[in-house]
Structures are given as structure tokens and as C-alpha cells.
Image (cartoon, one colour):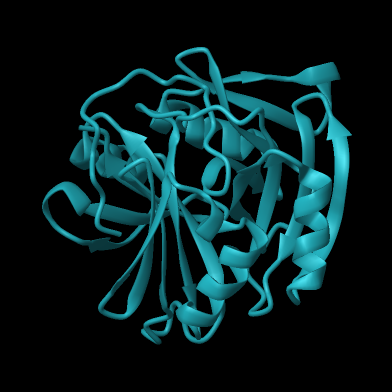
Amino acid sequence: MRTTHPGPVAVTGRCEPAVPCWAGLLTGSLPTALDFYGPLLGWEFDRPGGGRWVTARAAGTPVAFLAGDGPADRAAWIPYFGTEDADRTAELVRECGGTLAVGAIETRLGRFAVAADPQGAAFGIRQVDGVDACALGPGAPFGAELRCPDPFAAAVFYGEVFEWEQRPRIDIAFEDDRVVVRAGGVAAAALRRADGDGHDGQHARWEVLFAVPDLDRAVRRAAGLRGGVRRELGAGAARRVLLTDPQGARFAVLGAS
């Protein structure tokens, strides 16, 4: 993803409709996940009712949730797209050929839904209040990248579900073999063809990018916490590193400045 950085910023907790602005992890062992992501991303955790899920906070701002109900061998992150009306967006998912797995339902964190696009990539929906900036800064999600067999068909699906063409702050660009989505001039999502390197194959999946203050230090820290370093992508401001946590969940880290 070619990323336009707004410079070092604090985590704001504000969320842009129609692009990824939140993240959720389904994992087999919640304690293992907390021991990994807390030190790596500087997160603190809220444990509502002492249950099987927690809210992750970066600089005091909620940025993600982690749930421990998943199969041990299928840990995964998914991005959550902001929307002003989760029920309407969930209906558009069905109308446009996607599958609705959960919701829309009311939670302590707001109204959410979980879905899959026609190529099988899972994503979430989070109702927001129409505010005008994503949560940015170290520890916060800084967009997401979809790897799939047909990124252009995916762009049509997500464009219809989140009504990109009707939003003046959203800009869609076709760059080589990918589609880049910018919100207010800042890269928020990229959709690209799975590279068939034996890791992606033809399986569609979203990868969430998290901002870190020092990219190289974060990569070393991830390895020391029993994470895996898969590969480095991009260069300059767009440089990021694809990692896995100790349970195999894929994500990427990107320098926050």
C-alpha cells in the first residue's frame, strides 16, 4: 500500500465511515495474545465482566478487540469498516453477493456486524457517528490490505457496500495490479492480487496494518515475543513488515512517522 502519512499524531479514537478504522482478533488463547500484543503495540486491555474478550487501548483510546473463542489453528485479524448505519450496510452486503455471519448486533462497544465478501475474505462493520478522521498514531490500526484472486471485482463489491462513489472524502485509484482507497488524502485500504508465493495462494484475506513508532524495533520485538517475521514489503514511507503472532494470526506493522 502506498501510504501518505499525516506526520506523527496522537491516537484520536475518531473513525472514518466507509474505510477500515477498527480491528478484531479471533484467537485460540487469549492470554497468549495479550502477552504478545501488549508489549509489541503498547496496548493496555479492558476486560469487561472478566469474559473471553478484551478491548485493546492505545494511549487510552480503544482501537481493537481480542476474543478467545477461536480454533487454536485459525487465529486471524479482520478489519472493521466504519458505517453510519450498520443495519443498512449489512443489508447491502447481502444484496451485493456477500455473506453476513453475525449481526448487526448491539455490543458494549457499539453496533457491529461480521461478514465475508464474495471471494471469501472476512471483514467487520462498525457503526460510527459520521466523524471525519480515523484513529491514528502508535498502536492504532493504520488501514488494511486485501489479497484476493480478483482485486477489481472486490473493489466493485466494497464500493457498492460502502457507497464509495457517493463520498467526497473517498478517492479510488488504480495503481498497477491493485486498487488503493484513500480517505481525506490518507491511504486507508489497498486491494491487490494474491501473489501465489505459497503463503497467499488464491485465498482471499484482509491483513490489518498497525502503526508503530519504530518499525525495525517492532520487528525485533515481535521475534523476541515468539512471533514470526514473514517478509518486508514496500519502501520509504510505504515500508511495512508482515508478521505472525505466536498463534499464526497475520498482520503488518508500519512506521507511524
